Image (cartoon, rainbow, N blue to C red; front, side, top):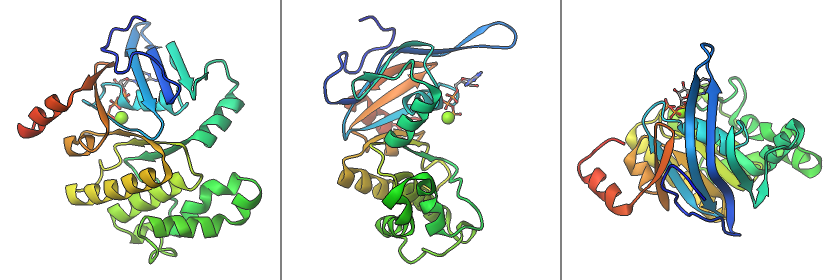
Length: 255
Ligand SMILES: Nc1ncnc2c1ncn2[C@@H]1O[C@H](COP(=O)(O)OP(=O)(O)OP(=O)(O)O)[C@@H](O)[C@H]1O
Ligand SMILES: [Mg+2]
């Protein structure tokens, strides 16, 4: 296997839930130039692992997360999800697989205004069948209890603090029990202490459920909590060693 970035785990193992090999994404700009957003990305994530990706604005972090979450397709390389290729699936099959596999959390909480916390969390179950649909309010309330918002069940998002809103968004992303949670700057809109508290809740939930977690962040202290960390630089992914992270943290460097 040949890759332009330093491969993290060079070979796929049976335990990998996400396995990207030499993945690229290139888009053709209106002026006819090719923009290489991702180049030679190798990323193999084991079940239950917490991986963080850091990198400057425009380095390709969201593009990478969108590829992992089946929102975008690679233009080169291979993506195996649970050991099976995802390329060539119909749009309908891809959407179904996405819904069954992934939960998403973003920097902006994107809660529905004028709907209670419970209604917001229950929303992804509106399209579920059978018992999931019937019990959606009960499930939503239980999930809100788990994120520490049992006392805010009937509160509208506009009455909640930023940290509380992100915890509602977290509950919403987990209500369908995704096997992989993809978090794009989940603490980006929060102050340090509130962000840290949200990460505490997030990590506890994924640990209890054995959920795989991929976090994109600008914050080294958030990245430090992951099992493994990677840096994206102009679309090239490299693993950050524990030593390099300690040195960067000591010098309060940005990444
Ligand atoms: N569909 C597209 N067409 C053209 N350019 C794109 C497209 N998608 C992404 N880009 C460009 O690719 C680069 C990487 O974008 P991406 O959103 O992945 O960056 P990012 O690392 O998430 O940045 P930020 O930290 O600001 O969120 C940017 O320069 C962006 O403008
Ligand atoms: Mg981004």
